[in-house]
Amino acid sequence: MNKEQLIADVAKSSGFSKKNAEKAVTSVLDAIFEALKQGEEVQLVGFGKFDVRRREARMGRSRKTGEEVELPAGKVPVFTAGLTLKNALN
Picture 1: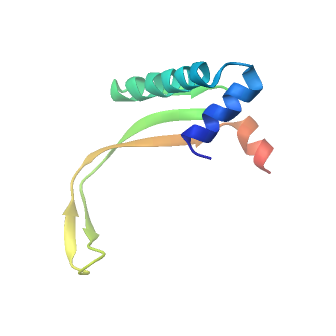
Picture 2: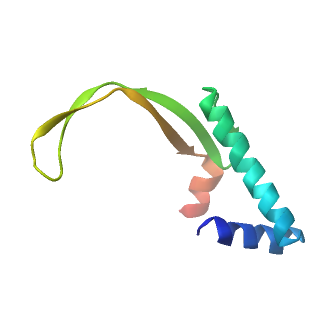
């Protein structure tokens, strides 16, 4: 499912117009994005948790040449599924 399909599903299930559903979906995604940029955790009970973790610098391998390259330290987004979501999938 891509963003356009998600917007269509939200519009259908909520009775919103497609334009209003797009605003709603975009607003939610923007709020999650901004919270993660600020280093905050976003927890949606039953669905899951979005968080930012620090990754240390490490050695990796170039896919093209096979030679070792240093991968810099940085921050990475992490999603952990909630129990309700896990149970729904199994």
